[in-house]
Length: 305
Image 1 (cartoon, helix red, strand yellow):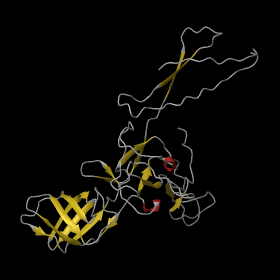
Image 2: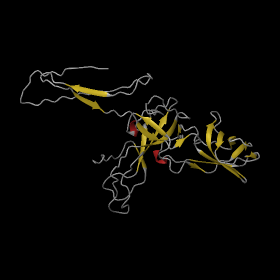
Image 3: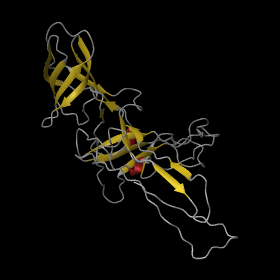
Image 4: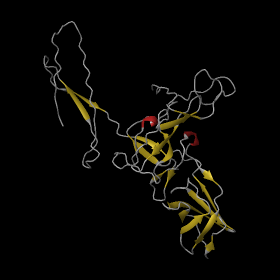
């Protein structure tokens, strides 16, 4: 698309410098698969002055911002831990050491295991690392599927070798569930805003055409930003916390998503996207424990090179 416009001043004073600003909002058509992301050029010419070459200005447009949930499925797609309550201080890691197995078996040379837990664990979701143990048998794998009707029924893919050479009855055994210890660059998602408190929905691709749909709708999910809010690594210079970071570099967020992947509006005075931070003000000389906030509590501008 190309367009032109004229800025006209009624009175021109040759001794006065005139400056105008033009605002342009670029909207990509997400329903049109042939629509590539926009680039914007300004060509400026003064009608009262002759230019040999027009002045062209290319406006850089950032298409997406990256976040992480800390969890990926066996197929490499992004998953996330579902929670019933909003709490960004839970971060991205998860560990559940005891989940008794009511029934199930490991079949010979079959990496797919179907089992039923004695009790439902509401945080079980595809992508969680799973350690199945019963007696002398211990195998490692990942959750592949959770039954929609009875969430105690799980499908697990064994990734450790070798597989048992005979069938193993899992009744009375245990299932240990956990994320990776260092998972803050795991489970990428993308959106159009750099501020985690303003997110409306996530996408699985950088073109923002494929909405991310959580495995369990109506639940809260945690994620972390890639925006550095403390790029200068500001630390405490005195007190009992001397040398520790004074402000969070990459805060956590927690929002509730529906079955379309949209952030659900919360009741008044409850943030749609809650954020968790360490530290509060420059006046403090002691590190404060991580806590939830309705807004990003601090931002230090990017340092100049």
